[in-house]
Length: 402
Image (tube, rainbow, N blue to C red; front, side, top):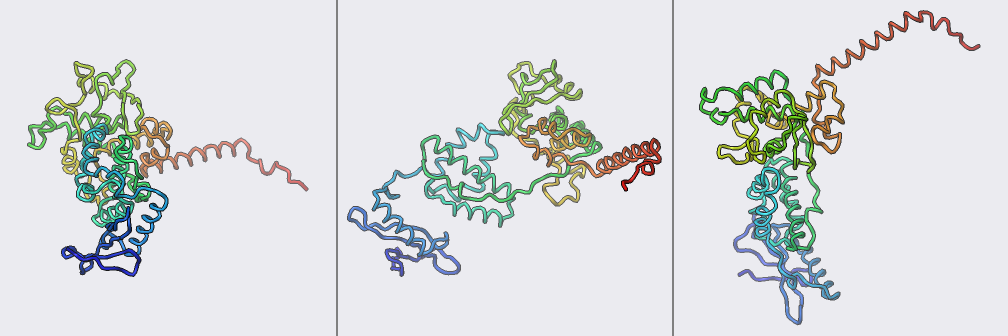
């Protein structure tokens, strides 16, 4: 057992680890001592490797003395907070599954980024400083700002639910952490030729190649077609049930969307034909199901394999510009913009709460921009020529004031 030695700060002690190393030297842990109910109390503050210093330990001791002077509870007097592991178990089982894709992303983020780091800590032991270190560590491992933001968002949501469930009433450490800036705008969308080539490949005879066995009933083709013609997200498509389809009004009801609002997507002729073929006998049944007849949870990897086979991502190094399934939704908005659809209309069809969101999804191709400018010039010149013919001597006829 390491022995405590005094530091120059009153009531602050340090002890060196016989196992842990930090910066090539034995790690040092800082403890503080004070009296509680007439007894000497030694409280661990933290290790140097965790960012703690003797000065910070002194501040902790001062806080403890101040709390006792004002009759406040000390940490060791308070009911022990639930551990992050226990909260995660309850959260992932009871709440996260209600989200899109039944909490698959939350489960993955917890397992890959949070479990080993926080599981053994009580909720009152996780500080903003710990989350800042997590941000730094993930950035060093080249995780994207969006992934880091998702992890912070999961922690924030878990603390909020812990409060709702009366499991923890302390502060939410995420509130004091600045989220990294996300630069994930996608400029890439499919041309009509690329879209047709992709849909044709998704509909190929599955017997041609072994890897096409997942395309047996053209399910992946139909899902992609539906996204291209309505702008629906994969999760919104997977939730579709028979009663969401109205052939009389030619509207598809998209429920429980990302922004929690219900919206309606008009059917094109191709979509109407496809949905009539896929309508289940039971209106409460899902339109698209897996091989076991259950709700689909994610897009098949066959989609990415076919995109690679077509070479749609050849030479693309920026991950934000790669063709993925979400590109189908982005393509829908871009095609609308190319034909001059008002941004507000695009926003409503896409289910965006702000027009700015639609602007990032509504990029016009350079050729259409050029055509728009050339068309403007042509109309202007036509009007100018007409005006000149009607009033050839307009300037000459105008008398200038003396």
